[in-house]
Each structure stands twice: as structure tokens, then as C-alpha cells.
Length: 268
Image (cartoon, rainbow, N blue to C red; front, side):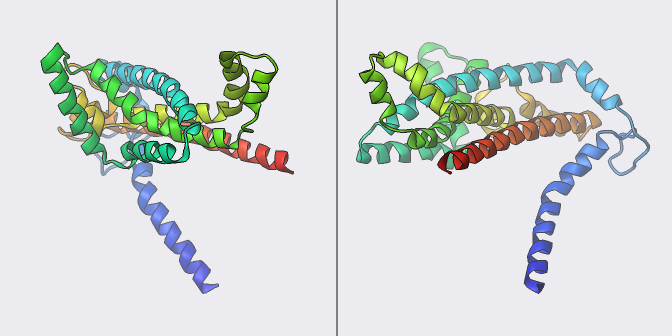
């Protein structure tokens, strides 16, 4: 009994330490006063000013466009890569999977600096300038492994004879891929897309090193604004970003729970 109380108290303290700053940020995004220490009443003024700020709106547009394009491209490349890896022999599959894990385990700052150096080198050869394109390529690069890791489990759960059965029944390879394999692994593809979209919206370090001076996303804009002091509009913007990412994560967890429940019902 005492051990259970201690464990619950410890868990409560950890959650409090992690989420109390976010709760304070959200509360003060509705504060009339610019002061961070005084509560002077409820207001939505800072949210109104937020949507009237052209710098923030441009960054929001860049962020959403970047996240959408990079997620779609990463899903296409990652899905076909996962299918290829799934059909490899054991040794080759092990080598490729270890290479796939590297970008996931690699610190963001190492990935960001490496991509920056590569883009600068390529730019010196063909005139590529740092900007939206380099950011997009960087986001696609770090999103692909997460898509692969989302799709591969669905390929492993799939009956390996379905594809061969479709071919035996007269289907072409592409038709079997579209009508047999894709529907089976679609939950993994959707989860990979949502994860890639969330990571792209949330990224700061890699974006900072690959953006150049002509473009920025919300994370870079918040960092630039915070250097001159935390303004209430930053609280409002951070609140909206947190809520957006939270909703996407909830969608991912709901999909995973439904798939797990469906699998248990199927096995029963």
C-alpha cells in the first residue's frame, strides 16, 4: 500500500513538473496584462493580435505548407521503401534497418549541421541557395524513417500469401499493390503521415540550420521573438501550436487503439 502511494506520488510529481509550465503558458495567453507575474483579467486580445501579425502569418503558412508537402513525399518514399525492406533477405534487411534507425537516434543538431554543410557544398556546385527548398528536403529526410517504422509492422502482420494469391488470380503487380497490399497497410501509412506532419510542425533545430535567411517556420519565428522578451502573442502562438500537436497525437493514439481492438477481435 505504501509502495503504491509512493509510486503514484512520484508519477504525479513527474507529470506536474512536465506539464505545469505548459498550463501556466496557456493561462497567461488569456491574461490582459503584458506582465508575466500579474493576472489582471481574461482577454482574447493577444489571439487577435496574433492573427494580425504578418510575420507570424507568413511563418504559419510556411510551416503548414512545409509539413504537408514533406509528409506526403515522405509517405510515398517511406511506404515503397518499407515494402522493399520487408521483402529483403534477413542480412540485407538487418543492415538497411540499422541505417534506417540512425536518423531517428541521431541528435537533431548533428542532422541539422550535416544537412547544412551538404546544402552549402551542393550550392557551391550548382548554385542552390538556402531557403524553402532546403528546408523541405531536410524535413523529408528526417520524416522518411518514421514512415518506414510505421508501415513495416503492418507489412509483418499481413498474410504473406495475399500478394501471390492476387497474382495467381490474374492481377498485375501494380493492381495487386493498389488493391491488396495498400488497403492492408493503410493504417500504418496514415499513422506515418500524422507522425511526419507532427514532427515537421514541431521541428526547430534542423529547420534553423537549413532555412537560410529568406524563410522561417513558426519555431524559428518564436525563437526570434523570444530573444527580445516573451510577449503575450508568443504565449498565444505557443498555445495554438501545443493544442494542434496534441490533437494530432490524440488522433494517432485513437487510430492505434482502434487497430489493436480490431486485431484482438479478429484473433478471437
